[in-house]
Image 1 (tube, rainbow, N blue to C red):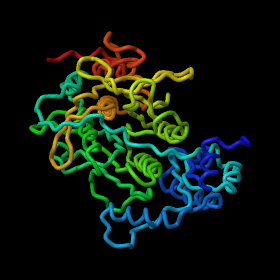
Image 2 (image 1 turned 180 degrees about the vertical axis):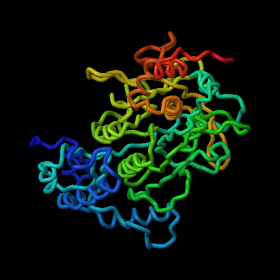
Image 3 (image 1 turned 30 degrees about the vertical axis):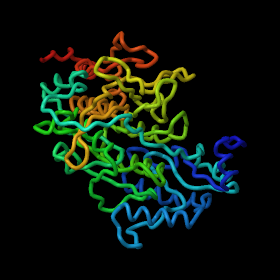
Image 4 (image 1 turned 90 degrees about the vertical axis):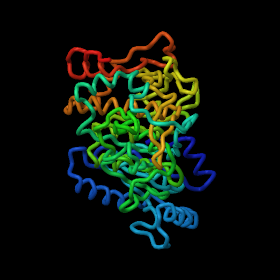
Length: 436
């Protein structure tokens, strides 16, 4: 372990006297993906106990205030909380292979020297990638322009609609009572402002973003619209953002999702700029054979967000119906030998119709709207070939892409995926016949 602390961690410790850290654990410290769930839980408890000596609980009054807000937002009317009233000194997420907690200037050196620790990062505080525009809309029974552009009806005509596939959806939650999402939410979790999972939480959306992105992935076809890419797939949906201990909530959602037999993770959030702090979590998803499909950001060219700018995720930008990259869609080149340009691909992200809470519908613009299109495509491919790995799904989508002449490579990279070509790449068969 190097003697010098990362500068951003040192600055935070100097200014506040403590810092929240994301700890990448050595692979031997936690069970591998094949280990039984009970062994993983037991290992996490043992590791939390062993590592607790390096962590502190700062700002007791601040945490108490956050706990009150967390209980209020999760519907608890009394001061007594169910389960943990405040977070433990350290949380261990065994499948992801990471730990989270607060350290002081005097404990961080010992933590970094522990043989079970690989790296220590300043914990990032990601934010939702909010739509750049929202417009009320009415549902249509015909498929949306985005679904047609990606040639999804050609897969539907073969009976490929996502059956048997579960997609992780980490967002603002979801309104499962919406008619377009009937029987689409297999399981739901809410992580409160302290990062604790709320017991027996019922599906809900703290905004509109989560319901809208959920609809694009798994919206059921019918009189209430045809905007769901994989209308027979299911979601494991978690409310993880925004507010409070955001990184605890997101990482908790990732760990939870890995216990729900998901194949794909759709996430439209991140930290502006580049940080390596998410790498351990993304690597944990990959080790567990889950494909991370992440929005690149809405901050225009020469920008991107982490983890959407990693070479280990399928990074998604936005396009409009004229085959142009949306002006707001982020893009950036990095000095690295593998996959230096982000996003990897672009997908429909302007004028995207989907559902919103309270039985409503809206059109939204953003890379957040493009990302669930690709997650839905991955779900269709996974249902067509259940034994396909995350790497197989990713390779098929990337190989299917073409870049229209209206899209500069620096903005669109590989271009736009084609569902029929992706299916052919995945299965080794001929490209699916076009249907009107």
